[in-house]
Image 1: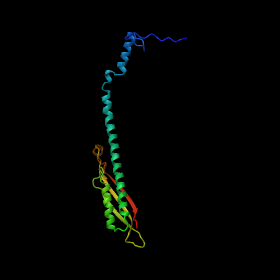
Image 2 (image 1 turned 45 degrees about the horizontal axis):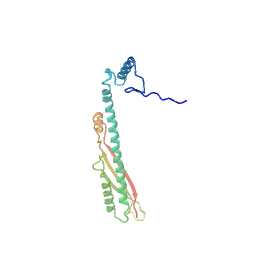
Image 3 (image 1 turned 180 degrees about the vertical axis):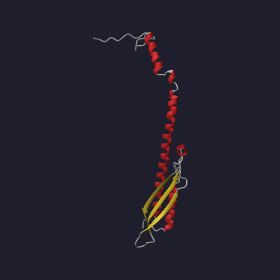
Length: 181
């Protein structure tokens, strides 16, 4: 048996579906208006939903950004403490004052890109523990800290609404390295 192809549609007709009767077409249009475009009572619904959801979205966005800024500054402080301890411990045969200067300079260089800590506090402390020569430092301890102040408006809003809420956080990092002989 051979298969016959259906006749080609006349111009202006579609092969996909037969034309709808007037009653079915009217009901279909009413359904489209009611469910796809919304009724008259639901026209302002999207504005109200946006007005309710937008403050929550902005609050979450600012909280994520503030956490990212705090995390970035903490990582930079950790790196600065590590760089300062290494600079103060590595060169062998230096006096303590030159080790202190090298560590402080390394920390200053590493803390240059802090976001909300304009002037970090840096300290370099030697540990004397050599039994044969007690005047020679055997370990360098470097501490870097700074008060973090909020950047986004969320910090000011929490401070304003909370009243007694402390929004300033102190970020601190400490690193210790053995002094090379």
